[in-house]
Image (cartoon, rainbow, N blue to C red; front, top):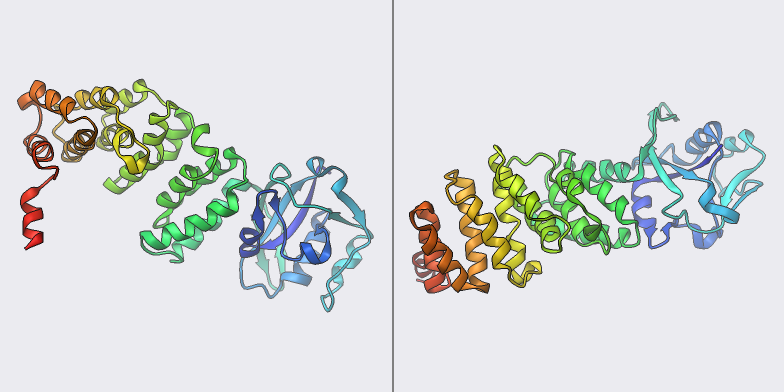
Length: 350
């Protein structure tokens, strides 16, 4: 067999993830990771140790080859006071004298219960999909509500995944975007953005997959500011990709093309100013009168105005009445006063 198995509750898995992969809480005490060699012993250990677990129980599939000499088959070392029925299933159990490294962690499955026991899973999901399902369930249960709490959750996840391979984080985020759950897109997108290697590893196909189904203003702005705009700024996708989105029949993809230029110019998003690329996309959508696109065009031009007001003035003058009245008004205000809506700002100050 090419795999061994490790049982863990979902909270314990997240708590044990780190730079080298996964280390259980008892690793320092035991000196090794307890594992099982087959189906029979895995289910027996699950019954003995996890029958009363309140949290979901996961069965991790661990590749043997990457473990090398750290994998040793030895007589079992049961915890003091634990049930011992599993000892009858094997004379030797696999012990791993080191963390379960990222390369070894193939994936896993949530164990379904059957009375006091558990049922062997029909299939094992890749690790990224397994973690995404677990996160989506937590979000649906309301663990984090509102942007501040979602970002606090994401920061904790980013610490756990800091040493994970970029491709794993991308796969996790892609699966999470496809899961229903309030806040899933924000957490997924920021996990990629704040991972040391994930953002620079993205290519056009990855970016499109991370978009998932764009169906709202929020969907687009999170995706474009955290993912596509960042990748566009760094050259991972080019002008042709944004031009393709700008020609889409889908209003949300057209909006995404424009909002993807915002990180070129906004300092808080890493921008230093890029009039050529910003105005190239703006020009493609000057005549679009969809309200979501018009608002995005105004935003893109106002963001550039902070960096290169002269370039925006020339663009507005050249396009004239091809620009929607909202765009002319809001961008004009920004150029003259530095504000999108100076009247509203005055009323708020009273």
